[in-house]
Length: 127
Image 1 (cartoon, helix red, strand yellow):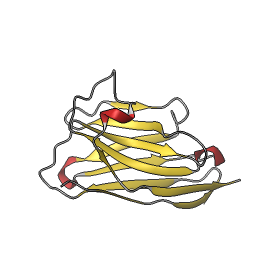
Image 2 (cartoon, one colour; image 1 turned 135 degrees about the vertical axis):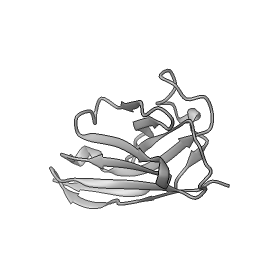
Image 3 (cartoon, helix red, strand yellow; image 1 turned 60 degrees about the vertical axis):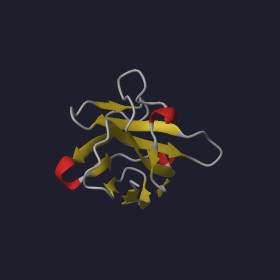
């Protein structure tokens, strides 16, 4: 069973930066795509960013474009999310996700696309 383990969350002031990491438990795991979702209190879970595993095509939500960058290290089976210029609205639990299903430009931002989810890591941005 593949497990995704996030790290790097915490408390930061507005304008600051954090880098989230997501390690996969299985060295032989080869997802089609991976990414990040987030969920703030009282709000629906939303797509943040995604990346193809073979071809590094990336996608970002409009709310984070120009501020967040997703990347992956295939050799380490690790996914990253570099978050800069953080805002209080970025406060949420961030979830690492992976898809062994079909993953493409038409479904990368859908919850149903992803069959593996991490436990989540809290990111809190103070004003």
